[in-house]
Amino acid sequence: MPRFGEQEKIRIKQRLLEEGERLFTTYGLKKVTIDDIVKAVNIAKASFYKFYDGKEYLFLDIAQNEQKEIFEALKGVLVESKAQPDAQRVKLVFFSMSVLVKKYPLLTIIDKETVEIIARKVSPQRLEEYNKQGFDGFKRSIG
Image (cartoon, rainbow, N blue to C red; front, side, top):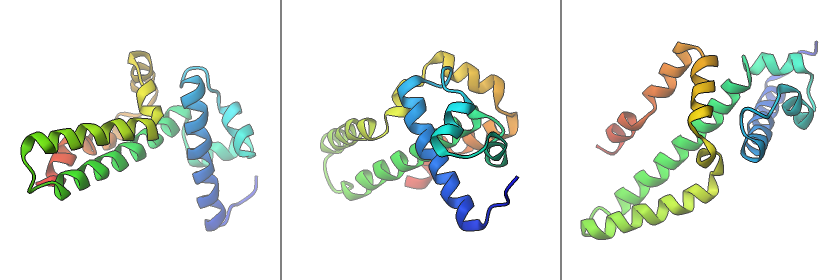
């Protein structure tokens, strides 16, 4: 099995995130296989496991990255509109959310079945890490 240099690891990880997002958004978590992912990224299946314990972990990383970006964007809207009336701020937040949903369609395909698959397949420790990033973290970040 090839050993990857740091730059190659970064490139492969980025490709896994990009292709994973494309495949999951198009076909859903249940239908996408690791074989589909490694074919799209052009790596060996064993190489995939150097980065992720399973496709659910990749899905969770993608969702977590998108959630972070959404939280940062919404935080920016709230900070920039602090002097405006509450009604205007609410409008700005909702408009921003509508734009962000289009930018990150993966989050719109998460359904009960997807959540149940992730809950079954992902370790409790990894789920806890994801949970720590949640809305409580967002509330703390905007004070």
